[in-house]
Length: 425
Image (cartoon, rainbow, N blue to C red; front, side):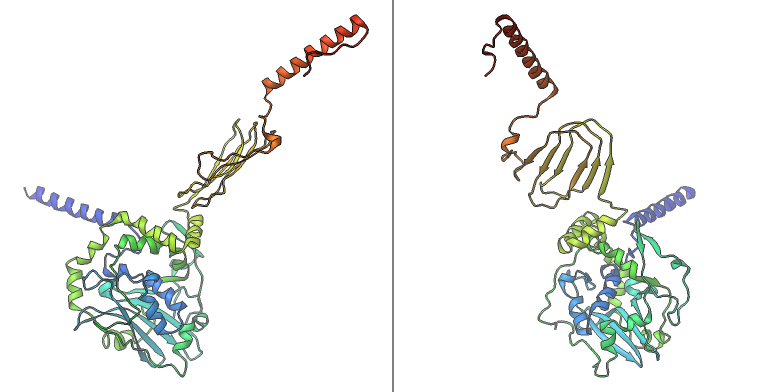
């Protein structure tokens, strides 16, 4: 009996572990609330911003599709405020959410440290309650980075991420010092930014919305992975020596209510819609069509370029298919003998080209198909209205000519004169 119970428990544990592991098994998947705020996207936005006020506004803009946090469970996305805590030449820039009138929860912290030589290093640390212990994102530094040590995981120039080969770009502290927002922080005229907004009082430009499922959010975000992982990486320790003394033990805000929700597994409900990943991909394709096509063209995992080669005897056609749909690019090459047709369908759509190439000895036709796809408008030039002569047609014509020639020669010999050839039209 005891053996049976032990076996049952082991099977249950194994099954649970297998389910959790199989739950999309993405490298970004943490199973924590932080999954709905991609810190790689936050770092990219910080690099592109000019001021902390602009950064806060864009971070909370629904069009950026970065903020998907709902920490207090009211089915509305939370407003993230930005607070700069200065420690000498170090800026501790906190991203924080007011989860109730009495409680705030830190989401993540930028530590921006400038050295005497003017170089700057930066890290972004997710709060351990939302991301787990030591979840740190930073640019991919080269060997000249101050205070850094070589990481054997980044010895090469490429990495395989999510089935894709990603080439990463080293960043120097000198380059980081040139980021627009970094330059702004260290201006003599800089006034320390402390977001004026709080629970129930938010800027007029901001309107909340219902959060997406994590699968939908990931379906959108993962299309940027080639950029994210090419420029940023995870690190395993804080470069800022006063992290614990100044920030973690002195200024960190956390909510016991959020801790309770994490312990109860409340946030795991957001992972219950795997079918919505395609919807997230569609949203990315609509908002960033050029980036989407580029990522699909070079993706090894979701390659939409299909190349087929064959040696066949067939009619060669070069066709551009206009019918709307999510067609992929298909190239077919063949060596053929037949009639060459060049067909162009100019109807716009979400299609790409289907090209076929061959070596042929042919009679040309130029056909333009009507966009309706019903062959409603087939235009042919006057010189091409007759069908191309086939081998059987040529035999019949030659036979008629032969009979006419024999009759002509017979009449000439018998009468020593030419008579009208009644077989001619």
